[in-house]
Length: 90
Image (cartoon, rainbow, N blue to C red; front, side, top):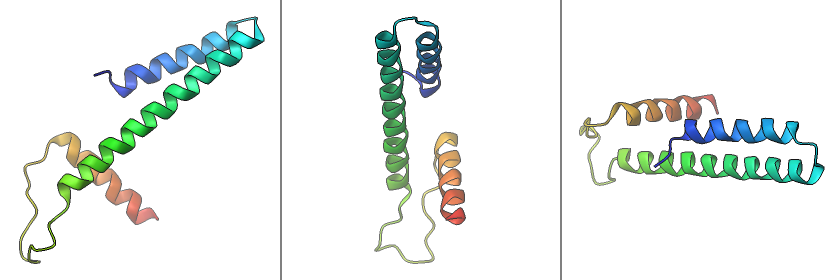
């Protein structure tokens, strides 16, 4: 799978190319392609975030004394921390 950073670099290249092209139609199409790729990256990020959050949800039947599993990857911990910060800022 391609990384988000790799795709974002290509989006930037499309935008630069759209600015350099003389043909207005081609320029508009390149910008449209860049926007569509940006949306795809955003959807993928949100989908990954939802999957991470679902893994970290404690079942309702668990008692308050039980702790959620701590075997998480570093990437999952970072995303969980970012979500908690975002929720606190709301």
